[in-house]
Length: 339
Image (tube, rainbow, N blue to C red; front, side, top):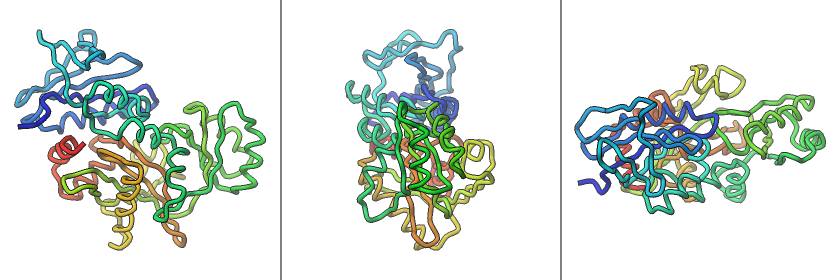
């Protein structure tokens, strides 16, 4: 008998990633164990939460037309459907970006006392902001960080561009400190393009981080909490056909994602151990994916952490799960049971 009966899978978001989040949420809902749970799919965007579909235990999925979707009562996280009130007792959060990765949804659920699948509100907020997250890792001995510079909207962009070019050199990556799926990111190769790249990043975030480009191979690895504590999945090497792993490479097939990564066992073990250490250092929960650049001489550099990584059928974490020989339904049940 499961300790949870009604699982709400929350997807969509208020950010540029909302369509990807829908695909991730639909895939996750389709793989949850319907012999253990009643599964409810909630589309949440700009404050409106509505029931898209439901699947009772051992039953077919029932969808609701857009004009007749029951609305979620956010006072107690419930919905009235088919003549009865259902109060959700667990939330599987699949909102990429705002508010699912910023800690806002987590804070709401924490106030209500509803368990959920991801990191806490505090850890989510820290991890989502690239500059804040790096600050938590600046003094650790187990991973390196690329030199960087920080700017907030309203600061002198032209002066910042000149000083940053002088201090860091090129190439540089200009990134919104908050956001994902490579929205707002530019690879800059000379000073003339730097100020405009910062302004472009402002379209996604009011704060921007500029990082020195580190040459090397790109890897990603995921960690989660299971019955034996923090566990890791096989390492993937990402080989982009574009200049870097941008949105097009991620979602339009312009990259090779090799799993397991073609590297020595010692290197794979190092990446997995580093992933587990970062997971524990930040106090993560649920499934988290961490990206790296491996410099040929200097070793492993941290890129970023994804506290709600993509979960479409073609996403990186499902590839890791399949390579590990794990059943996706059982894997998701593990996340639920240990979060």
